[in-house]
Each structure stands twice: as structure tokens, then as C-alpha cells.
Length: 363
Image (tube, rainbow, N blue to C red; front, top):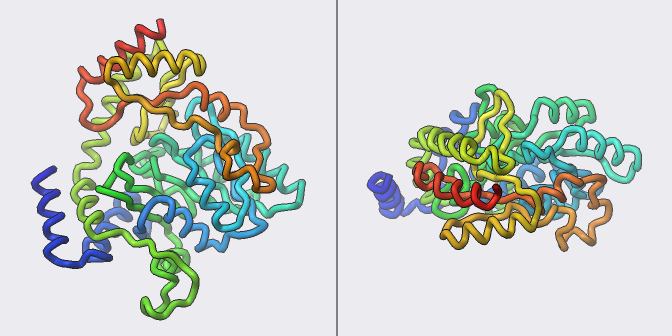
């Protein structure tokens, strides 16, 4: 991709349209078509994308927003920034995504307590796999709630052929370099079929602008995608489906080699993953430490996503009602998960080298 990438970068530099240049609008149209929704609005990063969605819905004090307890901090951070309350929900041990039964129980308990208004479910497509949106939608509709699909890691995933970032009332993604579709810095986007919400997000992302940027009708953010990043993403989007095939081939080989030694990822029937991470489960923290040390000695990188459940983060200790109701699985996963090297250009020899270390340590 290097020649095309360099041309795209130089075109932006030559044009001097560094902010919201024509490549940004073109990318938004391409992304909307890829996902299969009416509107795509880009922004500065995936965290801002979540914030903009909550602002468009007027989420604030007294609102309960249900968030998986096993995910990245930003998924709940944005809730607290808007003065709403994150309510942490357990996840499914096999898929790592929000558990519908735990979600239902948490909503019913919040309703029975009467202290908060259940408003939004933030369903994270963790490690590239979409959440169980059929079950989540049924629960959300029954309780009169909105779904915010956090597809920061899920872009490119699918359910029965329908693309991730099309399942929420609003969906968001991140273009952080390590994500399935990554740029050369920070970037994010929102997706929706709702015209009113799209117009609000377009205003909020540019200082709450009205008819022009000097007509400010609401308090907003400065959150625009640089033209340079849009140009980079256009080039990468052209080969994205090919890269998806490559990571799925890598995941299949990992699973074939490791399935008898560790707990490998589960992909439900009809679901497709974009494999932001290939995450295994080990017997416990002691075995994980031994395996990670062996990988390090073999000069093979690995990472723990995530070492702490959300509810135990220091920042949430002072937030009333933010404690989880029952997150046993999330606590266990934080002690047992380990993510292995995963990207479209892994070779068969690379994967076999990783698997060899794991199989020898876990026999």
C-alpha cells in the first residue's frame, strides 16, 4: 500500500485543506455504504464518538447507562463525563461480550430501586466480535431504552451478513492504529439512520455550530477527523476486506493449533469477527504469568486486555450506584485472558511459533 499511501498523504499536504477537506466527506460516504447505514460522521477519536452519541440523546444526570464490566475504560468514562451513572454488567465467558441475562437483571434492579432512569445500553463489540444484538434489542425495546453500539474494536465484524456498526440506534468506531481499520493517529466515527441525531452530531463535533462555525447554538466539542487521516483510511479501506480474510485465516490456524491446550475464542453461528485481538483463556493468573514469560523469552509479544474489571477502576469509586450487581465472569476473565499477536500479515510460521510455546507450557 505504500505508494498509494504516500500519494494520498502528499495530495493532502499539497492541497492545504488539512481540516475537513474533501477526503473526509468522501470517506464518510464510503464508510456509510460499507456498513449499510444512512449517515456516517467522522470525529477526532473513538471516545469522542461515544460522547457525541450521548450528547445527541441528551443523556445526563439521573440516567443509568449499562456498560459491560469487561471492556476498555472509555466505554464507561464517557457516561460519567455526561454526569450519568454507569451500571456495570457481566459478560459472557465464551464471547467476552455483554451477557443478556445479566443485563436484564441489572435493568430490573435499577428500575426497582427507583433512583435512576434506565436510558442506554452500551454494547461493546469486543475483540472484533459483535455482541448478541438480537437479545439486547429485545431487552432494550421492552424497557424503552436506546442501544449505543461501541464498535471501536468491531468494525468489519458481522451477524448473518449484516455489518457491525449497523446494530445500534447509534454505533461508533475507532480508527486508532491498532484497530481493525486503523489510521496514522487518532480518529473515530458514528453511524446512524436517524436524520435528527446525525444533524445534532454534526453540530456538536464543531463547537455546537448552527448555520456556520461562528453561530454556536449549543455547547459542543472540537472533534474533527484530520484530512490526512481520512486519506490514509481511504487507501486502507480499499484493501480492508482482503485483510479481513487474512486475519480470519490466521484465527482459524491459531484455533486448530491451540484448541487442545487452552480455551480458544468462540464465534457463534452466523457471526463474523474482525479479530481486533485473538484472546485465549488460561487456567489462572499463575499459569498466565508463566506463559507470558515464556513468550517474552521467545521474543513474542502478548498483552492482557484487561487486567481489571471496570467497576474496580479508581475513577469510579466515588460514583454512587456505579457498583456492579454481579460480575463474576468479568472478574475471572481479568485473571485468565491473554491476547496473542494478530494482524493481516502474520505468516503460518509466525503462528506456529506462537502456538509451539503455548502448547509446550500448557501440556
